[in-house]
Length: 332
Image 1: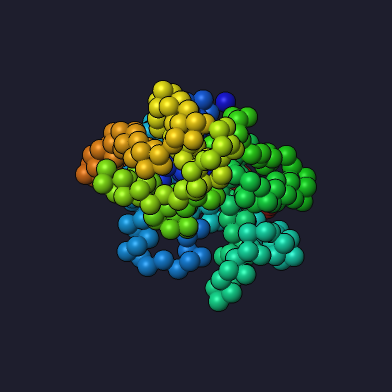
Image 2: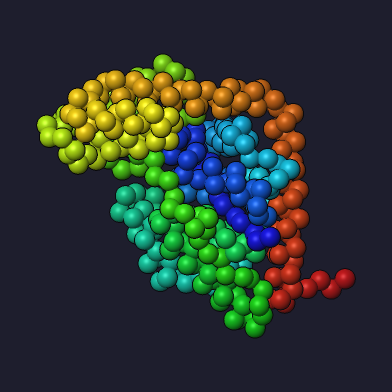
């Protein structure tokens, strides 16, 4: 059984893009692999969150992942900052990471452009902390998207650099993993790109949205001109609506609207209301479960404690052995 590691953002609520893009894979992975899923609260420090906001955000994310089906008995679900060994390995790896290679990472260059007044050391060494997150459990599989491939390459480079420097075969090489299938792209309601909170909360459907909110958002979803020729190709904004329908609607419903498109009789208002109805039916059980988990403080505490204990056992072993390889050994 191979080891899988994946980070979970520590801010905001889960939307359908998170659910279909990653979480559904996580639910399958926890049954088939040795999985470590962590809430990346240390990474969020690059944006200097307020203490109360940080704590609330971590709790919200934890509750929603538990409610959606991650099982503390099947996987190791933990909060990054609960495992101090990660920070220790991060320090060790930073000694073998070089300024030039870190500055060439695409995500760092983008941050320099987008937030020139907050180019902190944490942003520069972000890939090193990500490396520590991965190799501390000697993971070989990491569920990541295209935008994270450079970070994963850095993880391989730093792990191999440690192995070569100390002439050991200690850290395995981690590779991207998605069951060999193309990751599901969930479009945003703005008619372009994928669903993302960064594009505005009105462009995303969250697992906590009630029926009225879902309906309101779908009514505002961007559409295009109605078709004027039979079997015309769909513009991006319309294809996005059909992609959303594929996720939550029945085959019969999809076939009906495909037919009305081809016949140039489609009514976008009807289509959007149908998607809203089907989305609400799909999300309602998860939304209810989120409320139940949120109210069960004992269950939340137990889940966090189990995750911390399992993650620290794995991390402590790796760091202890790595330090011995380097030459850090006790005199008693």
